[in-house]
Length: 202
Image 1 (tube, rainbow, N blue to C red):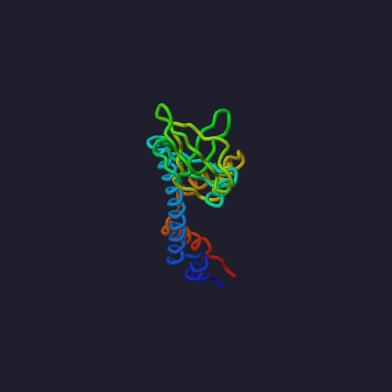
Image 2: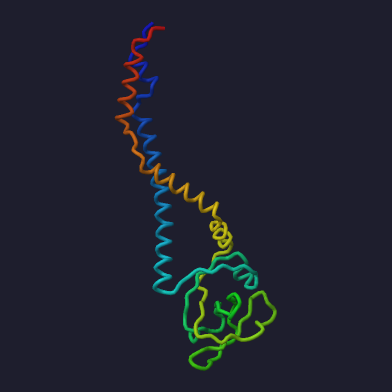
């Protein structure tokens, strides 16, 4: 027998509602991913501007000397300030000649020569003060910290991770801007298929 055109249209999926719902879901997913990418991009821009204008940078905590306040693996936001502005109780990073910087809490602060300050530091997890005071003119004060985020930063610095992220971002951009057929175009293709199969005899 000969299939009716209406039956064939239903078979090839010419309904307008499914096309509309599918396009709506795809659009919602694209917008969600674009919003996430936009937020991440805005955060990167803000951090870059902050670093240039306000001497704000990020530091990673590799040890637990500041636990439990700032555990190992934390990522902290720090800002460079004159050492004379430091107060007891602040958590600061000081540079040490020929050694890595240290980030501990200020337990004593005294004015020094030539506008410098003499700071006594101690890690929250340490039972005693650091071996010797630090004579500095500037420090980086900790403004905020996020536990565990340093591990993610370290992981993202891996070349394979960077390559994977690049592929994902490139794929998303291609998918987002790839031309898509409209519901009308899909219905037109469906009608064409319906006409092609309209003469099939079973």
